[in-house]
Image 1: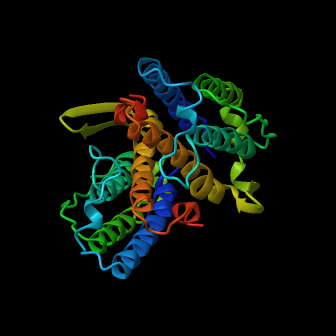
Image 2 (image 1 turned 120 degrees about the horizontal axis):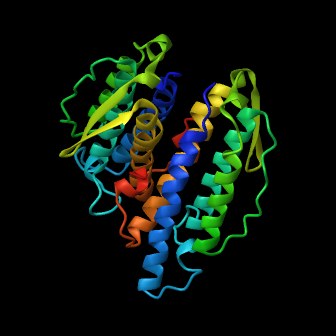
Image 3 (image 1 turned 180 degrees about the vertical axis):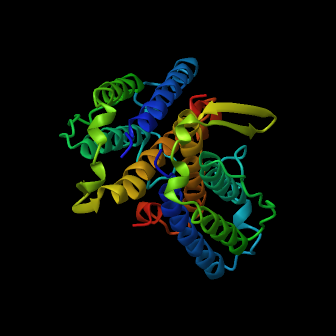
Length: 162
Length: 162
């Protein structure tokens, strides 16, 4: 199959620039650095910092699993926007190491992931189209909506990285 | 390139089922049929009905353009959840007609789209990774968030169509 890496590279680069704008907003409004990462769109949805870490998890997870590699484990200890940008940078660095050729024949793989207490096993194409990619953009878009709803001046072109 | 159709088929099918749940909520709470399609997540973001029509536009647009076909034009006149589900059904029907083979050599295409007053031209891969797919899931996720924020009982598994 084709490499999924370009989807992740494009949009995580855009997300990092969105977090730059969130940092500028934080500085301009004198907001403490631990506040913005804890913002939520809806009370029973995850806070911004988890939306970012889960987006990066789907990026590195899908890239590694479809290429038959081990998924690198990151600590999930980010508390500031700067640390979240580092998380994105580490993810971009990892996925950039996986060549297009590593995805040849990926269709034949069976992919198992942990989702909370459950283990899910999918044929690779179903994992890709119905799980990894929708999940990645779900968390990307929720990051955007949390910041947008909280007054950070961003628009669709920031989301698209245009 | 590989067909993008499986991404759209999977997630639009999930969105149609989410709209079923929105209809059940509408009936249970005796909400008038024109109300839910006009809900917005944030005052200066588009209402639900436009989020649905734009998601379907990206699905049919990307599928047609990457396959070198004309993009079918739909009227953008939906005012009820039932009409929005019809829009999704028409989109699914159209994209199901495009065979995998139609995307062979799509990488060589140059894609031009109208975005408001602007015309944007991209190499096909950039259109796919940086515009069509992120846009599609942006509007998918915003549909979900509008309904979730307004009390429709949906969760991540509905979004994933799991």
